[in-house]
Length: 323
Image (cartoon, rainbow, N blue to C red; front, side, top):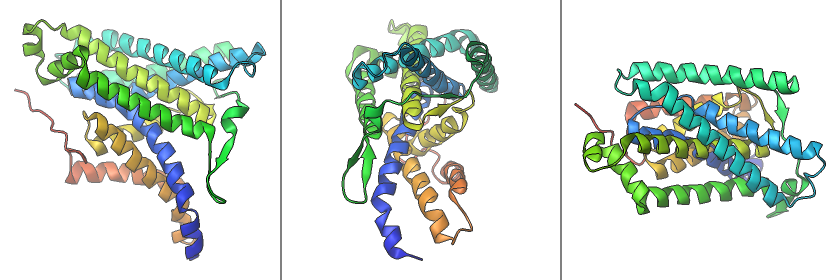
């Protein structure tokens, strides 16, 4: 075993893990927002996430075909695409809540869960059908913006691309904004009141349905932003791309303490780092017996262990029992 090699690649592995972790954290915020209010896992959030990615790639492909993509500053293009992806995913999440979840709100918990899984499969096929008709393809590649691919050399062996830094900065800004919204505004107070007791919140004059819809909109917007950043970072997307990242983001939310906004960020970072370490070191430590393809086992093994030994998550979010 080459110890110098293991130590030498460590800083780059940490950077890659942080980038992946922030991506998971952004997606996990959507799960956490909805669960914090309804104690309901929105399994269609994976498709809300990838829908934002498709909106982003369509806008960028349109700009490229018009020959203006490289004429605008990259930050302007990215902001426009991010806002469009957030808006589209927010509208989709709002529609899903009104059509598929609200009529089942007082049904046994298993029924909305089945509805969520059904919506997930439905949206996958709708995206595939739409892109097949529109472009005769549903594997799309994000156009390259050369400025985002510039790599900054930190040391002789460590470098990071501009687009990776954008992912980290965007994730931190969104976490801060969401935390401020929930804890420092009247809307946030209403969200916390509905999460605590819907009946009491209604008696206090809070429109519960509106607040629940707003929660879905916020979670959807976070997912849409994550989708665009995912596309910019990794390039290739298809209607099924959101499934595995969505499951891992759910794992991150559970790991940090589902319903807890800082917990979603912490869980995402821990999971991203563990995955990066597994992908980089597993082959070296096992002499090639196990490779990077086994990294997914770590994510779901962590989920099982957390559910067994600490179901409240790392930050100990308390799940209420309702009569």
